[in-house]
Length: 173
Ligand SMILES: [Zn+2]
Ligand SMILES: [Zn+2]
Image (cartoon, rainbow, N blue to C red):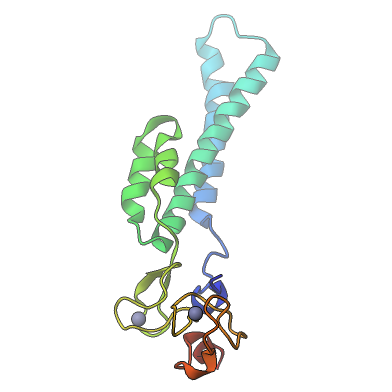
């Protein structure tokens, strides 16, 4: 029962950057342009219109999704202390979105920053590995996470008011 509000500074208001939306729209338009105007000139007998609409729109949407995906990775990777350049390159290079699938399989747990020293900390950390700042409220006896309002530990019954002031109270002021 961690309290994400105490440590996570929510920077993910916009997870898909503007540039990737612009590129995605441009990619969609380009694909449509190619399939509707360039390709028919090279074909001797065009396929039925219904098929063409389905086929052309699918490729356009796929191309747009590709760039939205890369944009998302560029925002999501830093939150997990992963290299956004490396993973954007992987998403670009791997065909058929395999790079994106790999990213979702391999991505690390989300990290936030220590309020005291700005070190990246994972959401399951209780203490900052660099400065020992207490990131979540813990029982001083069994070190399990407790809630900010608890007086006694729900696991071992330890009286929490005897412990050092937990980080959450410092955060709340
Ligand atoms: Zn720290
Ligand atoms: Zn306890």
